[in-house]
Length: 210
Image (cartoon, rainbow, N blue to C red):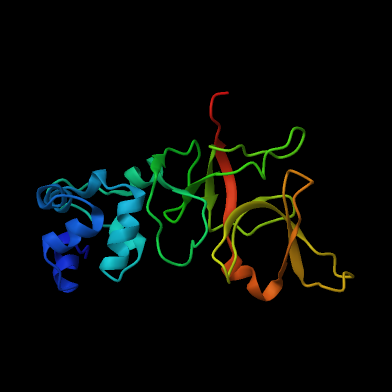
């Protein structure tokens, strides 16, 4: 049996005003989402899942019993976009926009906005300042993939090229994170930090017109 947004909110001990505040909406706007969740976007689904202590899949599975419609189509259309910055941490960042990926993505996918020139270099894998890169957390990174890296200590958030260390390397197991620009220093990450440091693999990007 599907549990609707209204019931999940009540189980969490919240009133509509509480949820609306977290979503940055008016009470009437949130009330419309409870009545018809099909227009929910990825960033709002992530917030609701945290508020209601359930998975994003649980929110996506919410069905309006009268209309019989699921919000899954809306999630596949857009993903929230976050700016790369210092202090990323485990908390959800404030979205700076939404992007519609050209391919199918998981419910946990998101996008990041490149905020510097460290990944822009002619002749290399380049993501330019202002580009939006879709990050898929469900994909295991392979050599040469561009990944979203978050420093476990500082929260510094970066896009880098993933390169596993050869087993004969004294620092193995682990990997190096490289820039497209060869003038920027590589980052060494030990294998024990991989699950927390690598947030996902870049699957596509939206390039600004230049």
